[in-house]
Amino acid sequence: RNLSICPGSSSGQDVKILRNLPRFRNARRDLLQLADRENWTRDQIRDRQLTAINRLWRSACTEVPYYRLLANEAKLPPSFDSLEAFSALLPTLDKKLVRGRPDEFLSTNPARGSWHRTGGSTGTPMKVFWEKSAHLESLRAKYRMLQQWNIDFFDRSTFLWGHSGSVAPGFAGFKQRVRRPIEDHLRNRLRLSAYRLGQDDLDDHLDRMIRFRPVSLYGYSSAVTLLARRLMEQSRTVPSLRLVILTAEPADAGMQRLVGDAFGCDAAIEYGSVECGVIAYGFPAGTLRIREAFVNVETTVNQLGTQDLVVTVLNNPTFPLIRYRIGDTTSIPSRFPKTGMAILEDVAGRMNDILISRSGRRVHSLAVKHVLEHYPAIRRFRAHQKADGRLQVVIETKSADAISTSRLSQALTGLLEGYPVGVEFVDQIRGNLAGKHRWVISDMVER
Image (cartoon, rainbow, N blue to C red; front, side, top):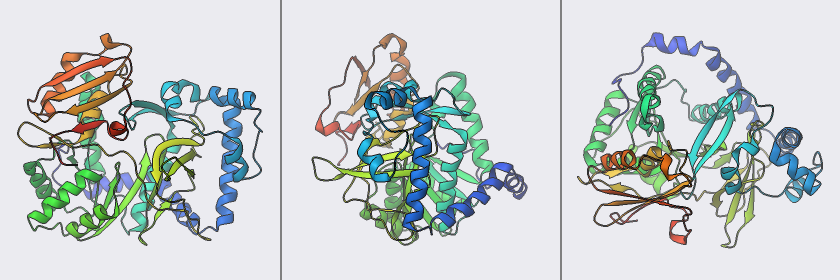
């Protein structure tokens, strides 16, 4: 269902009150700094990154169990003379290691913050800790992206998105279902559910957008593309829209063109992740620029000849990810202009299938992930919809008794409007090339 309870925008008084809160006053101040850094020379950027890396590394070696042990065993230096020395001396960090031992990456002197969960490239939940200040900095990078397109972060926006908290069981889910619409209203935001994407759902989304008159649309790449195609089929327009942001899934140049043509406005990419925050975003000039104030991004050639992305998060020392293999690739190495942030050519990552419900309605893959992520005992999963509609979910866990099979099946059957759901527990999910980048697979849709 649609997750917003507010058909119109928030009142001018609501926005005025929010604008004057310290959080948003500080955000506007920081946006000036972010804008200034975009004009730094390459030497200025490299110097700042090296300083940030050495500060992060010194903290990690003394306060983070994993890095303290690594530094001692590998006899690593307390600091690095250059970015090249940093890359040459420090080994890369595998995602499986962080996923399996998150507590070893938490500082013994943590700053204020909270844990966040995400699903990996094979449907594996992952737990990471974000300092509150670092989380706010990541949000401000998003605000700066809007600002570059002459959009204020309090302008009317539409999110074609999910909300994992709303499908949480018990009181926690109830609280989130009450809280989220209120926050959306105060932020002048219309939230449309990306979980169900049938033609009637898409028509309703378009009706609500046209009435709401948003300036920007932010959503999952595949969901926004479906909405754009429906808009073109009906020869409709959303006249108020000035920018569409494609995120959370890969979006190639063809998808960007289709979305931009359908909505009659610019379409840009935002690239990031739960564990790394905002990594890069689209500039008005058409380039994808790395947010080098917050991340250092390297590329290393893999066996397929493409470039693996290796990310160091610079501003979250409570849970440092240093030379972290995020699991995404790019076609060529990053480009480094003399002035301004590095240019990322493209990003290839996780793209899952859309499921089909009994009535023929499309269901986004993240609807499945958001149901399953509330069970800590689930280490990873793979969901496969057969040609007859039934969904087979294989769950890797050591504690099957901690998972309510009936409640899980009921929730997923509800998403699929009656198609049966089978749940199988295994000690280990076997890897295969077909499922490497897809943890939700459907035999009912064309890929």
